[in-house]
Each structure stands twice: as C-alpha cells, then as structure tokens.
Image 1 (cartoon, rainbow, N blue to C red):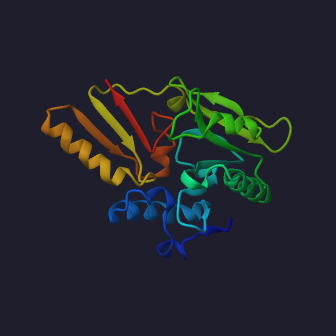
Image 2 (image 1 turned 45 degrees about the vertical axis):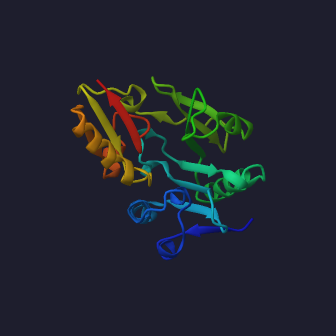
Image 3 (image 1 turned 90 degrees about the vertical axis):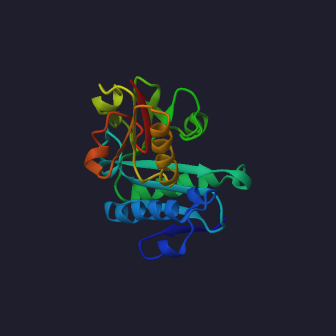
Length: 228
C-alpha cells in the first residue's frame, strides 16, 4: 500500500477519506478548512493513495482539541481503516509511521481516546492493547485516554477535570461540536431545525478555537451531547 501525506499544498487536490461516504461540498470544505488551519500546529494526515477510508490523523498533544494534560505526547485524533481495507495490516502500517515520526520529533509517547466498551467512533481497545497501549486515565462517562510510552517511567497523560467529570448546569439538550468531524456540517443544522419544529429545548455550541476545545466539559469535543 502506498500512502500520501496531506499538506496545505496538496489538500485541495486530495480526497479526505472520512468524508467520502457523504459527498457534500459543505462537509468536505468544512473538514479541509479545519485541517488546513491545524497544519501549522503540527497536524499530520496520512492516508492511503487509493480512494477510501484508510488514514491516520495526529497532532502534538499540546495542540490537540481535547482537554488533556499530555505534554511531550503525540495525540492521535483518528486511526480509521474500514471496508475493503480491513484485514491487510494497514492499521499497523499507519500506526508504525506515526510512532516513527513521533520518535523522530522527540515525543515521549502516543495517546488516543478509547472507551470501556468499543464504540464505532473511537479506537478499538483490543487493537490498542495488542499494540502495547495502556489506560492512562478514565472519565466518568467511560471514555478512556490510552497511551503508548516510548521509554520507561514516563508520566501517563491525564484528562483535565472538566473532561474527567463531564457536566454542565444547563437544562435541555446541549451539543458541543467542532468542525473536525465532516458530518457535523450536515447534521447539526438538521438537529437545530428538528428541535425548533418540535418545541424541544436545544442549543448547539460550536467550538472554534483550541483554547475552547481544551477547556470543554467533555472528553470528546468533536460531538458531545448533554441532556439536562
């Protein structure tokens, strides 16, 4: 398998794998804009040369859009291999490239979100455990922060209190989201319209900066829904 690193120079000419199944210009544009603004923060997006869902996206943890304390770590936003790409070792290829790149940049380990029970939008805990990852911290809602240290006696990454104990005081439905996920560009407006039509108390909070994301009341900032 050949891989391509998406950069600011070639992003307009490359397909973004996670948006391919919902081929809407606004979704693709939203995701590409978010990525383009993160490249200067050290974000890496490596994908298969073939068109499909086979990619890894990672960034220095101090620039990650989640509330964690993980100085010196590289944070994996997403490692996604699906469809016909599964079962060929491509996840291992992508993870190994991330490890090699991160070590070359002087990082002391990797970290990534997971959960006590497998969730389709988070990393597979069985795969992480097989690759040597261990649990560094866990939030009250079962979301976990796993990490792979590159050396002995490295302090594990931790959730900030706002993420470890996710809570808001506002009643009704409150959605926190970023433009990192391409599907939000389509579905958030649908939720807002549906709630209004049915008299449901609903508010969407669009996180638009790293500072907002790193202090959000949730360990998952790209899409987190609270109710009462």
